[in-house]
Amino acid sequence: MRYCFTLQVRTDRMPEYVDRHREVWPEMQQALRDSGWRNYSLFLREDGLLVGYVEADDLAAAQQAMAATEVNARWQAEMTEFFENAERPDESFVLLPEIFHLRETGEG
Image (cartoon, rainbow, N blue to C red; front, top):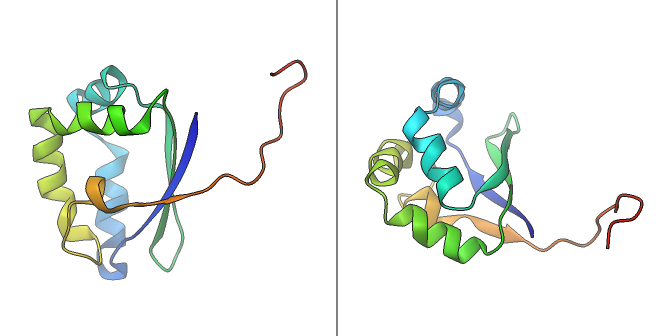
């Protein structure tokens, strides 16, 4: 399934946030893959609106699997300061409902 979510990055921290994502730790990337996150992308608007897209068989299960990893705890501890709210970003993003998807020819 496809999932889209939003978060709000602090505008004064956007350059550093972008820099941190240019070199996401290899162990964090592997943990995401191992937890069932696929085709994961983040997009950032100039006002700090962060839009994420991810595919997973079950997002809740993928989130739970990530929450159980030590590398995710370290990553979230570092990323929390970049967001408008004080909560962990991996526990506070807002899911958006999908209202349209252009299917490939032959896709079921």
